[in-house]
Image (cartoon, rainbow, N blue to C red; front, side):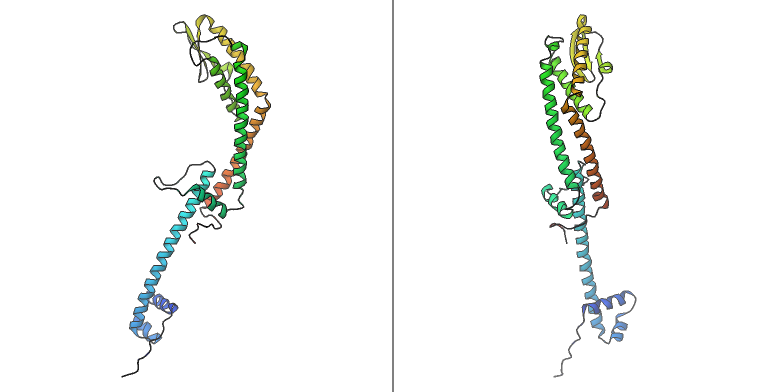
Amino acid sequence: MGKRIKKPIIRPDQRFDWLSRYENGESPPKIAKKDKVDVRTVRKHIELAKQEMEVKEARSMVLRNALERHYEDLCDYARTLGGQSSERTPGIQAPSPEYMDIALRQHLPRSPIWSYINQKDSLQQRITQLTEEIDSKIEEGIKSDSRLNTKLTEGEPGLIHWIIAVLKSQVEQWSRGGRGLSVKENLIAERPQEGFVNLHYGAFQLGKAKQNRAKKVRETIREVLQDWESNIKQLEEFEKLKKSFLELRRVEKNLDDEIAVITLRRVVPGRCRYCPL
């Protein structure tokens, strides 16, 4: 019985070299002759190299797709931190915000967005508190205003209710930098209908006054609104509220700028426990 010839060991780098030469036009017989190996060995290992390359490319594609989706999740979550709407395709469930918050913080632990978010939350709480304090003063003051103690208009829910609603709306507009309503321009008495005049202050329906008392009722309402609008603007809480809204706009602008850097880059630096790699 003849002695068996041990086949040469073909290293991975060698078979990938054969694959490269084959793809560049060198035939298996030429490769076999040049490298002094059996042509069947060359063909076998060229096929193995192809299979290994396909597996490697498939894994690379899966990893790339997973990484892209991970970055998309991070960018989409970052948008929501600034109050923007999600750009996620409808029907695709978003990852839990709790986990995305952990992920983004691990990717960007030193980003200023975390400080801006804390400032924003604090300012919003302060705005809510100041607004409630002002609203309380308006309600107490209007309800005890002797000029409104008598029945000036007909119908429900009543003049006092609407004046309180008007003044609260004015506070919101002014504190945000808006012009609000003007007693001179927006307090309107409609033409009489069936003996009554409808009184409006902008979009607010103040009630109906009898035609023969409409002028007096309107002047009383004008006087009350002018006095209270002036008083509100002099409140310490109102000044604090305006400053809080100005500061909130500044913080929101800074936060939006930082979020834009994240979302427009589309690649989030750093790593987190949920990274595909």
